[in-house]
Image (cartoon, rainbow, N blue to C red; front, side):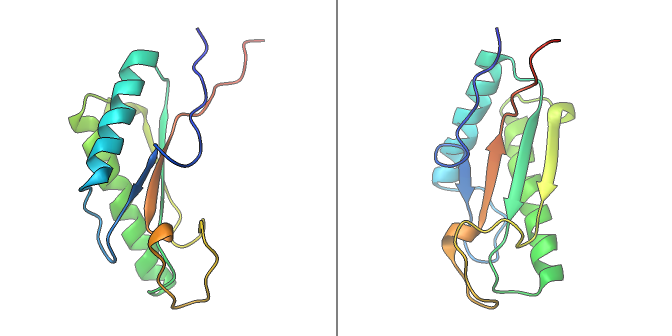
Length: 123
């Protein structure tokens, strides 16, 4: 059975407090749901794309997005997803959901998205 694609936003997105890399609140439910989906559907890989808003330097935002990606990966592993199948994609401030000028914080840009890539069909 070929896995179904997961939507790019919505139930797969964990949001973070300003400057934080802690998975808490609704983010815990998102991780739990995605881990359940992984176990039910036998996914091959899991990508964690993590972003930061424009309120810090580019270097600081890259480090923060790396910490966010690792925090989500750790939470997935705690819920039974093998670490070996998780690919981290920290992008600093490179994948904003809302375009803002430099230095402007926006809570919708402080996120990590859990993505189940759909493998190409067999040839």
